[in-house]
Length: 295
Length: 202
Image 1 (cartoon, rainbow over the protein chains, first blue to last red):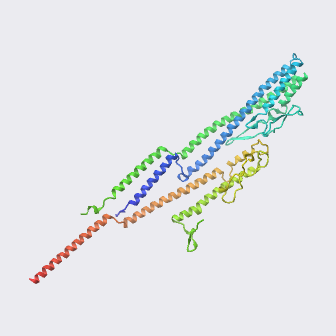
Image 2 (cartoon, rainbow over the protein chains, first blue to last red):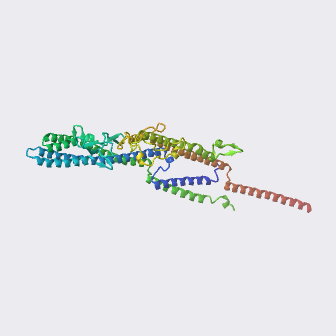
Image 3 (cartoon, each protein chain N blue to C red):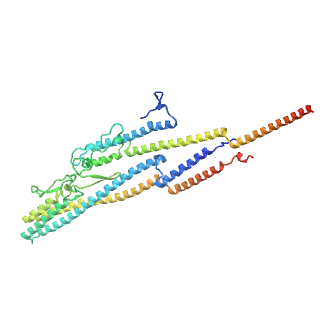
């Protein structure tokens, strides 16, 4: 059978093919990605898009969780201070109720309790990153203000709402307890109790009842504080989970779109060898024909 | 957009093959298709976000205004832009109190809602990327397949009509030999004629 006497175009096209392979390999090596264009692997590229979206979302969950956790730790430590101070108020009250204290002792104790009162107002007006933590969602103004018209001497100007924050795919956590539920809950109003204690210490009667009120408030706050402890634990667990998820997503992205360097490099070496060999073969074979042998 | 005319009539749409046909296909069909899908994504996102924004209240307690310029009917992806410059205009609150984050949660929930042609924005976009990649990969595969066919055809044609130097050399030798042989015949006849002529003369 007669064969194509001029195979050069075929050989050139083979060389071009090898060159294309070399370019692709070089691109994969330099970017460390096996997918540099969607057409390299359409399904893989789509997976990478979803992966990137999921990663960004997980990062955001992490930021929300760590921010919220910071705020809650702050609130929790304030509640712990409030509890210590209330304990001090209870022991002062008990001391005042003791039959051995006289009127001037009680006046001195009442002054000390007044100091406690303003300390408590300060604590309840805790602000974290520019917002008042115990004001419900009215976070731009201090929730507890001195008010001579109020029976407790202090008015709550916050609201009783709470925010929820999304920190996971199907996980939202309540972000705050409003002051109206913590410090000035009906029946266990801390400020009312302290005010009563001051009044009764000054008046010298019913001090025991006022001490009881304070310990009611103390118990109530102690019980409510569990919310923050639980939420902080939950957020910590969630952060660990999210960190794991970030690692997993990075692994997935690498599986879907990372270049397998050892394979790409061996491909590259093969392609280069093949190209070199083709070039040499072309330069050798085209030299002789029958004319060279005539005569 | 450039059109192609022949003797006064527009023949752009009748060019369906060749390099020009391919370029026209990309310019008039593929690229506008991708653009319109990007526009649909941008437009749906902007519209939905504006809608949620309008349902909430900004830091001062006023109802939320548009976060994005209202998207135009076409070219939404190219023209979409943030309309506010003051971050306190973000309608984060769902009840008007400054610390409430209810509307932010609503904005955030959009990510899992089927707001673009029945798909979530991420799904829609990843499908778009898949389609572009697959169209481009298809075209490349078609091209290399056609190239192979072309090569084989060229090969076949050349195997019939290509000029082989060896063959030509062999033919030349053959003709040269025939020529030499004919010359010999003529020379033999000539010499015979000479003999005959000489016979007459002697």
